[in-house]
Image: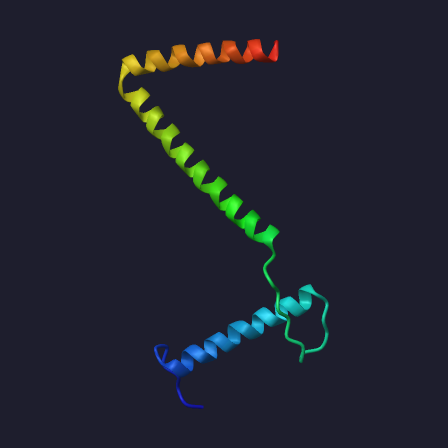
Length: 103
């Protein structure tokens, strides 16, 4: 068998075929298909697509919120005046939450 270099077109086709074959084996196992000659094609559904986009948006929103919270925490650690102001805001917020929840 001749050596295949990683940059050659033949090698790319070979690796693509190997990936496709392993993917097909996983799909056959998932759908309980025993026949090797059957090619399984999964079509994307709208619900899957919307779920994927929604979960991506939630992840990015969470990342941005975490970044902002870390920035606020660092600023409040650095400056005593902002630390006192944040403490007052957090106490007021806790009081409002207790009032809303009638605790």
